[in-house]
Image (cartoon, rainbow, N blue to C red):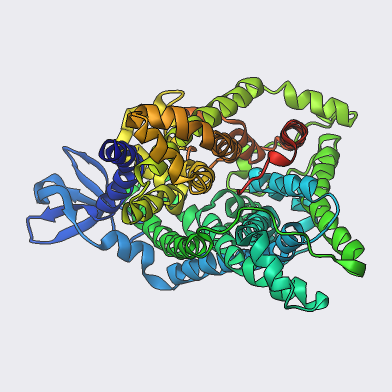
Length: 584
């Protein structure tokens, strides 16, 4: 059973992750070229070939060159590094690398500064309403960052340069990732470990010497994940940069999109290799930290540590956490409602964007008379209902597939430490590769299959695998091997042993993995933007429509999307109570 599960696990990941990345690497090395009868070889991109000759755009040139047919000795594709020379060479491309790295590093630092104290307060102290706060901090994380950028655009106009606006948007959207990993690290130490350390520490030093040390590895892992998410994002830099009449935030993710829209797949593939390497390095460090955490906590108790008393700092700490949540959630929702009611009407944020001629200033008679009227106009927009249903179906299908793969992964690695570590790397690989790179690779590999309406669900299954695997794996490691040995002694075969003994015990982890994958699937934009079904999801439609002046409608939909997710999480909290934990 172990070998069969290993093959079952590796095949879909190979098809959905390794094959697209390999196709990108191969395509980046293929360049169109023309040999002339005079012995000259011209490499670049062929725009047309007919009886008159071959029109080619030489690599590095801005204008095409027509080679008469009589002078063409050969035309085709060759292996070359010219795409990399075009994409990576020159001062402009060096500046793009620095901008990508600096943006991701600055956003990760901001997320670390915000998420570390929140994680320590929720994971190790007696902060009031910890359960509710732990639920609410997930909401900014599962919302597309583009929604926060749209909501706060007019407020961020005072921030210069546009680069800092993107840092603020990413930092305020992704800091919960750092906080959740901090909470997980503190809890993984267990009650006995923290209580033993507390006996040797003065009360005032306990919070820093006991809670900070266990939280730091989790904070580092969370910050590295934030770094990878920012490197891979194209929607926020595109929106904040292009709305200023020119692309003032030039990062690799946007360059991949630009080259792909120009039908230059070779340059797009070459540009995608740089963020891929950055993300892989970051995730290698995350996996190393994760492996050390598992090794350090193996065999320890799973009970929560007794909360450390905050004393006089209790009220300021509570104000800090609630104020941070207000900035991340209440402020954007208020701005969405203001725009829905007609604020800034007639001056759309994308008026000076990449296609100003295609954006008309709305007629004053179309201005909403109230917030309710604006919300009505939002839900009455063509295709909104179908977009919302498509988002739910694709996220649900992808989450289900991710859980099945995660179950197979954890079972295949049981009792085999080396294989288990290898499968952990395989599980994290789909999120380690930037979604824009996966999207281009999927088009190269699957071609017309991408036009199938629900095909993106399979793609999301691979993309969301790490979130499901994280939950399932954590529960699976806590099982007592003696239970499985007893089931084997009783004569149960591998499959019956799994479904009758193992699965009922890890079902809570599978349910949590499905929930995490589902929520992250709802926010996905980059990975499915090139697919037919993915282009019909609500977040992608909101991203597209904001560029064409649909400010009122997008604001209304963003408010309803945020409010709907908040209600869903609150109801889930009421039903699940304290059993709901995002990172067990």
